[in-house]
Image (cartoon, rainbow, N blue to C red; front, side, top):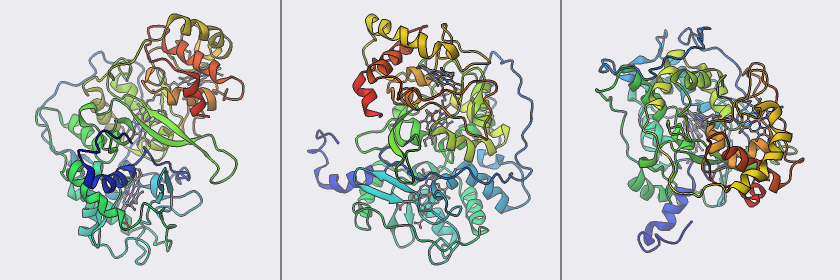
Length: 467
Ligand code: HEC
Ligand code: HEC
Ligand code: HEC
């Protein structure tokens, strides 16, 4: 943490800092992410049409016709409240953060690491003693909207209530009723690390006052119902900004740079045995339609990626995004993932400022490594191929200001999860043991400065950090 603001907010600094460090995704790394969930299909609510035309409509964003329906009224019709709640809980990916490896679903205990110690997700099954069995509907709404649990217990924003606050009261109630139908599991997560104790929870009072606005999603009447539905899901339950927006000194999301890219700590590689996973930084790419973001992706590309984990013209899922796709997005209706794509494609393009260009000799140094190690699948042209791999031309991963994810995929390879098909592509194997830090930096610079791509220079030291 930099010192510059010390004078400004000296008094609440310590408590705020503790709260701030609890931010989801940035300083925390879940070392026991949820297993792929039992693949219980959602009720008929989520039809999965097989058709996915290759042709793209040139005009990606539908002409807005003022929204007539509130976005929260557009959840696929289901028979009862609990089924509706299940669909919404899936959109919120509660299961990923509240199911520890080998543990029962929703019983909590996933450990999130931080430099100050660790914090665990809670048991949200209806067990009266260890879960939320005694919570009233109003208690639950307060936790989801304000980040405060019964007894005035302030929650740390590793629980993304800063996004869930946008979710309508009726939708939160539906989730509550769904959770009530789960099998109660008696399980108390391990105690949190020293700095995430009951005392430091009061730090969140300051943090919330500065950075949390408890307010529901407001329909933008100048936009279509589809756009509003997409915004509602992306900003609310989907909490995409938690990993894809940059944060300020207190780890609150910077609203004016929203979706231009964030960073998170998560696993790279499996390591040897439980608790031995390697925890490293990842860059959550720029989701705005900027050149270094999703500029090259159409609405249909984004929708396909969210819905199937595979956009044949751009990318398949690997890394931390896999959990989002496998446990959450692929279970949504195609209408809903399309709506999210429409919203994402309409974001103002944001290109991170500053940064030096990659020098010509840096590009040259990487050329032989590329030819040797990458061209087989990504082609000399960088355009990839149907039977080989995705294009690197225009890739958001390749061009992102922070090269962490690019370095990770070169070092640790990419494994598409079994739930996702990446067509005929080959598997990208890890090269961390084969290439030196300098070679990895060189080839990263090569792909970041070839075929019209632009990115900041990568140093061998950046690579060393990710080992
Ligand atoms: C990014 C990870 C993450 C996601 C996604 C997530 N949670 Fe949590 N949740 C946590 C963590 C961590 C805590 C513990 C916070 C604390 O102790 O201050 C928590 C706490 C809670 C609590 C407070 C329980 C208590 O006993 O204090 C509730 C309720 C809750 N989550 C419900 C949900 C629901 C419902 C969803 C899905 C809509 C969800 N969470 C999604 C990480 C997450
Ligand atoms: C837990 C953190 C996390 C969350 C939550 C998250 N993402 Fe990501 N996302 C990442 C990371 C890290 C990457 C880059 C590496 C990878 O693919 O894992 C990424 C990559 C992507 C990509 C680019 C794929 C590519 O290869 O170019 C898209 C598109 C995307 N995310 C969309 C979304 C959307 C939409 C949401 C909300 C539903 C979302 N993400 C939520 C972490 C996250
Ligand atoms: C054996 C074939 C193969 C080789 C060799 C290979 N890759 Fe890949 N690469 C792939 C495949 C397949 C994917 C898609 C993985 C997925 O989505 O599951 C991929 C994905 C990527 C991505 C992510 C694209 C995105 O937007 O998600 C980057 C970046 C990348 N490769 C760079 C490289 C670099 C640099 C090299 C050489 C050091 C290399 N690859 C070598 C097959 C390969």
